[in-house]
Length: 490
Image (spheres, rainbow, N blue to C red):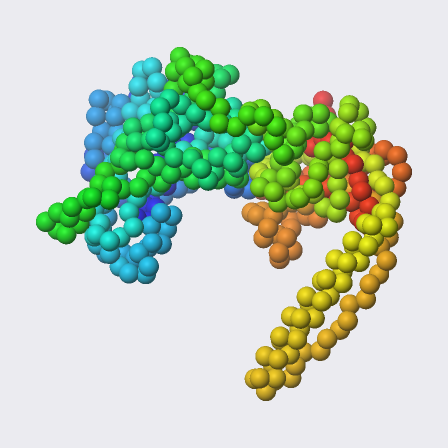
């Protein structure tokens, strides 16, 4: 079924509830059977890709409109039950469902119960009781994501590992929170009915978890946001009722594991990914010397990831060049750590600096540049000929061809760009809608040189897109990289 407003409401209210200090009563006042809309103020701190939700100094407040019915308010405000219903016909293509544009019959009741446990704090129970006509793709989608999970700054971290109860096996298994392990887990994870997924926080002992009852679930794990998305498949042998609908119920519970349970799972879990990885995680907020690169798969590290999903082939770690230590980052052309998005604090000045060493292009480098140019011209000419043929067929004037001219590249340089944007770097790349285009000073051919840039972030708090560049066919090495807020003057 389409992602009902109830699911969005629960996600929003969960964040709002977790942001409050635990007490014996909920901090919302509702009237039983109230059905008009509720306006909820939700504080976001980096767990969604919204400009300004930096998750460090301050939060972003968002007003949400929630359409639900209050079913019960009991125990002096200690228990709140919200109900969302839908009955009728609808055609949809969302997440795990696709009716192929055909309207189908649906009868759905979503029930969400908020309680405040004296030991565990806030507990949220969600129940999806759904009927749908046979032959329709069926399942249920629900997501778990702690605040700040996708924020690459070190102070935003609230957990270090993910643990799940795997389908078809006993016990617990999981992975460390780093870009490589998160990406590997995305397409090969199933969770068993009656189990749970949990973001383990060894530091505080309190770990954000969600249980499951109603079927095994495929876990869709976003390689940008690292959230656990449960896609629960319905049983295949359901029998239609008197109304002709098949019915199934899925239950989840969002709760914090206490320190004792966190410690037990942490100690007992099997680490799915260990040993050497093939990516570089670049830390933020402090000088990054690349000495831990490539990152071990079971190492916890927040930052931006180079080599994610094999986007950039080649070797990024150099052991024959270093400004300090024994390693540096090797750059040919442009090296783009796309994951995750780097959020910035509004109204803050940032400093970007690094040491770069640049070597001139070799004859082989220049030959490769010329070949890439010639291949591009050949492709453009083939595309042009197709356009000419199409125009002639339609009786239109064919477009003219202008032969591109090769220009010898200028001497190699190295620099780091730091363009800011509102939503997606891919969109900004495609249409040029950067909020600001900026780069460090450039390093010329020769020994190690410092490149640097300071820039101010506007009040709306954009993202920043970091890329490392070696121009002119040359090679650049990067070491002692730093992106951090400039300390306020005392």
